[in-house]
Structure formats: structure tokens, C-alpha cells
Length: 364
Image (spheres, rainbow, N blue to C red):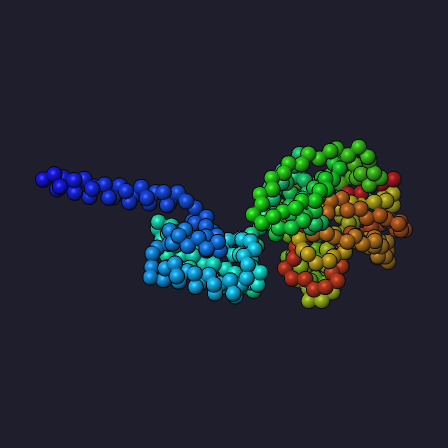
């Protein structure tokens, strides 16, 4: 009777013991378990290797030793871990490592208790390096963020980038730009807050823009394709994106098969204005492409429709604020008939967009 009672107690305790063990295993991160397996395998700690796996006939110490000898002969000394990935159900984990001779991908299959059921490792020619995360906040908000001179977006901004040395530039109108070098390692989370200093120097361009007059905010439309290059423009429309003045910008989507011009026109004569005293035009532009492009303004003036064009401006990807265009020839500028915005594209371009807004002039 006593033995039967003890046996019943033990049978009742077995599920509790199993649940406790399960909870201990579940508390461990699946990726960490797989990384521990690699570390134990590399250091020949076969007891730990076995403890992390579902026991099979192929998991004997002798077989693990043979596998390690073969691994060392083919791949050489372990150098470092270099990234990982995991499926949504956390059953399959891929871990990438570097050795003296190879780049390897370990693929682990796990069960619901996070025990390793199966392992495969293969040599890969290249594999994804774990990216770093940049979290950039600025005062004031809305500043332009650039990495290695390439526009990334406006603050506050989170962006994933490849590891390495990066040149971080933050700038905004009326503030001194902030420039610093940032060294990023795989998996880094770089959180930074940048307080921009108000610029105390006023340049001629800043003065001219401050006292400029709005000519066209692009809210009402009225722009059309130049007929001799109309095929280069896929769409021409008002947009709510990249607005810097009013409620709309002008969006142009382009398709070209060779070096070409893209020109949109505005019949300036419907808003007569004597531009003879105008010395500088300003326009805001958002260029959404890595391709090269030159922007200029051109005026068709007088009875003979003389073409007067400004010097071109080299666009950079992202926001190009307050681009200045200087008027050097003022002949017939009191009789402007058509205003042209012209893009010169030195190579073919597919499905790229450009946005214009806030066209202004400064008069002497």
C-alpha cells in the first residue's frame, strides 16, 4: 500500500517536472541556443553540444569529433559570427560565420521546446551582413539627413545601413549644418539627437531669398508639356508630396530612352509682370533619382520669342532648397511670354519623378 502511494505521487509529479524543464528551455532565446551550439562545437565542448540537441544515434561524441575534424580541415580556424536570420515561427535559424578559409551558413531546425533537431552547414559565396540601425532626431525637426552626401530623408528618421564608417550630415535652412563621422558595427543601434545652431552669418543668397516675392506656388496648375519633348513626360500633375509653399507641388514622372530634355511651360503672359528688374529666381526641387540631372530656367520673350536661359544647376538626390538662377541678360525681360523649367538628362531614365514648388524672384 505504501509503495503504491509513493508511485502515485511520483506519477503526479512527472508532468510538473517536465513543465518546469520546458519553461526553463523556453526562456532561452532560440538564436542564442543555436549560437551556443556553434561555440560549443568550435571549442569541442561536446557535452554542451549534446545537451542542446534532441538525442539521436548520429549525435554521439565520437561522431561529433569526426565532424569537427572534417570541419577544421575544410574551413580552418573560426574567426567571428557575422549575422543571423530567423523565421516567424522561430523554428528555423540561420547563422553566418567567418572562418580562415570560408564563409559558412549554419541552418538549425528546432522543435517547440527550442531543442535543436537538425543542423546543416554549407559554404556560401557571400551572405548578408547584419545591418546597423540609425535613429536620428534633431532640433528643430524636419532637417535633411545625409549619409556620405546621399539624402536619406527628414528628421526624425530611422534608417538601416550597412556597417562601416559613415559621414553623417544634417542641415536645415537658417541653421549651421552638423557634420560628423560615425563608425557602425553589425547590429548596432545608434541613437543620436542633434541640436542645430542658428546661423549667425547671412549670405547674399539668404538675403535675396528673404526679400524675394512669390511668383508661382504651383497650387493652381496651368503647366503643360513642351510639345517638342512631350514624349519624355509620362505624367504631369499637382501633388501633395514635397510641398514647401501652399498646398500643392508640381510632380513630373519621366521616361527617356536616350540623353534628353524634359521641359514644362507656363504661359507667363496670363500673369503679366515686368521682370526687367529681376536678378535672381529661386525654386525648390525634390529629385527622386540617383541619375545625373541639370536644372535651368528659360524665358521666351519679345515679339521674336527670344530664348533666354540661365546657367544649369546640378541636382542632388533629395531636397534641393532655394536653388538660385541668376538673370544675366535682361533684354526683353519686360515682355516675357512663356516661362520654362528645363531638365537636361545626360543618360536614359525610367519611371523617375521630380517635384517643384515655391518659385520666387528677387528684384533689385
